[in-house]
Image 1 (cartoon, one colour):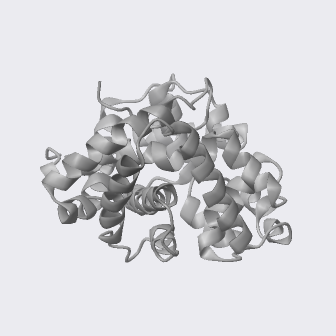
Image 2 (cartoon, rainbow, N blue to C red; image 1 turned 180 degrees about the horizontal axis):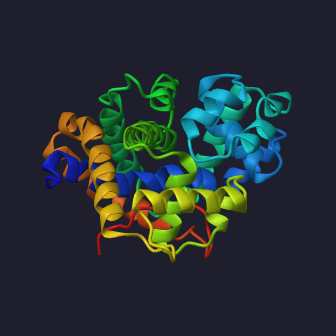
Length: 288
């Protein structure tokens, strides 16, 4: 395995700064309240409707494929039923409203000029994202640009997040990992509780079967510990993800990327404060 080149390292670094901006839509009570206001009561209705809405009034199958880590029956319970509660347009308005309200609470001490400059730079990066073969990234990139800095900032972060996620799913598939194996290995690596994967609709039987498959593959030991082989091979997947996500930052340039990192840092650190103990969502660590 070769060392990750500078564009790949930059892509991984910037992910740590824009992911928390996007993640307010999953973590902040304002976001949930905005979904509930349009009839999407319950966390998972808002999640599936909001995240799938850029695809239109889709059935379950495309979402099972693109979201990757959710058990098909869980997705099928939500889609297409959520579209009887709120149209995709209503879900999109709700997710943007909730995200902007959440970011407003997190950034109230920052001047408008700070937020506008961050939005300008992040939009430039998102506009340079190459979306061929990236369904969620492309669908979000095609949405109208927001009118105000926080809306623009969140939408650009979301486009980049889904663009990166599409590339990560492609790398997992190329490595021969299915969704359950991916989650099971992460649980073993991080010491996360099984609820991290059971909460996505998988059963204990499916979890144990995935552990057996990973053991036969040489990725887990008999007691469920990750092996050196698996850590090296999964790192290769992460490196492929980073390389595939590098183009926006190459297009933005080193100087403006550094400036954007500086502008996003206080927003990203505020986003990390929303994580509660036992949260199924994991944010990439910020330096320092």
